[in-house]
Length: 350
Image (cartoon, rainbow, N blue to C red; front, side, top):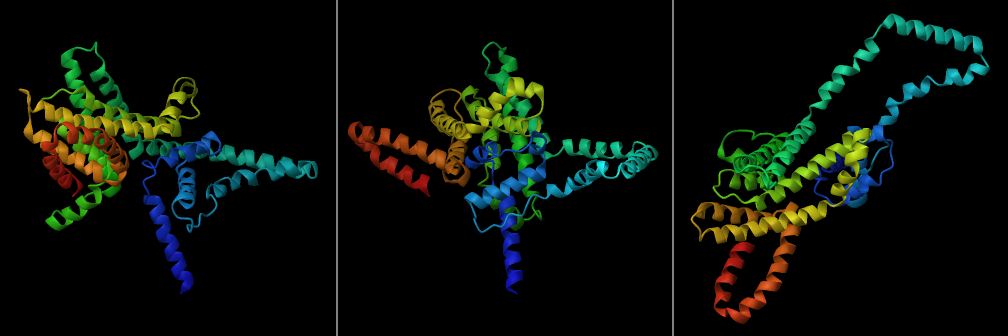
């Protein structure tokens, strides 16, 4: 019974390792960049999963048992074909007859060995990661068009809205591919599903984008988190799947390596931009473009970012710095604001 318990425990640990959010762990890009494997193996899903389990064993759960890489079995037939050539000096007649027989078998079999991998490879190209890369690459181009100052205003405003719409679609597709749809369309099932996704980064990005896609405000500053997210996804996909391409190595490798090694910097930039947008929306309440509902909903999203595990560290550190600079000024020059500020802080920390 103890052996069965150990197997069940390891099975649960492997499930936890597979479900771990490696993309939001700043240690994973550094770990993966230091793994020395051939370029043709870096794009294989089983190889990446193996090193993810080793990363999980090293940093998260040391009790996880990581088995040797299963890819060795796939290379055994290639190794099995080498001994005849090595033993050709001792038995040249046998090796020649074997080479003739293998040659004739290849000729009689036709092109079936070369044709069978082709449909599998093409079907694997359009998986969820490839779709995410296509959408995020499109968002990156459109967002740059929206920010570029020489673009006509009509095209820039249209690109501005399409950037948020594309990121919202990408985030919701990611939620669907990971968590699926609710088991049933009733209140209890929807509540369970909502609780499982509400604190994820994709859900936060989707709500963030929906807040601006229908707004009358045209704040190019709001595209900074969109650009950072698109850059991370595009750079990660290019580095994993186009590492052997000469064009990638010549023009894109340095940029992709910099993006993957500076994900923490991009996250800090995104959190600061999101907080700054909250204050810009408060200032916009005094203009003719004011939207009270949008400002209220956005501050609810900021509160969610402050408490969600995937964004809490960046937002809490930014708010701590703001408090260290603002609180002394309030106590010195406007002490009458101490009471409403403390009430707002209590609501914020709930």
